Length: 222
Image (cartoon, rainbow, N blue to C red; front, side, top):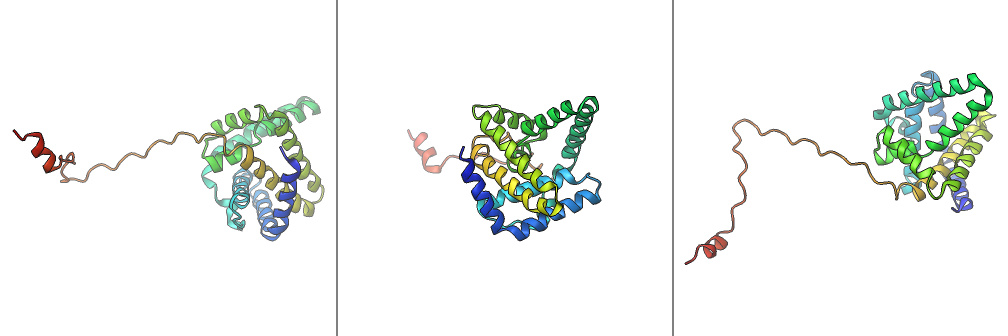
């Protein structure tokens, strides 16, 4: 994997769309804070999908994009609660087990959110597919991606103003890797066809198309 190319392109895209990215990142943080973290996961999903579209087609991020994946509110909320409980259990034992649990969840679920928003996976299939990808032949590459993503995000976390810049940079980097390594190889989940509408009262049943008159004539011609 060409990490240098991904980082350079992420840097250029961050500078190109710096204003909408900062506003969108700030809005995500404010909404998450006001909602006591309840809307944090679902706004992050919208945030990532908006950046993925920017990476893929050059679409400029919009402030309202953070609310574009509200259909995932409940499953992401439940998943977030499970992660928090697992982390608390780990840190209540000792510091190291907690760190291991958090890092393990981050690595295994590295691509699960864009798989849900971009490929329409449900949360269970998204985690399974993300696990399959990161533990595949390019496991070391994905481990480096996770380290870089966490590291870039953490660098700016010490200063809030810095986080407004480093979080978009880290997310763009991750979405570029997803676009190259994951979205093209992960199969789309099977979609069930919507049930057809029942016929209206008084509507005659559909008849099979009759054979052409000429063909019938030839068939029964003595």
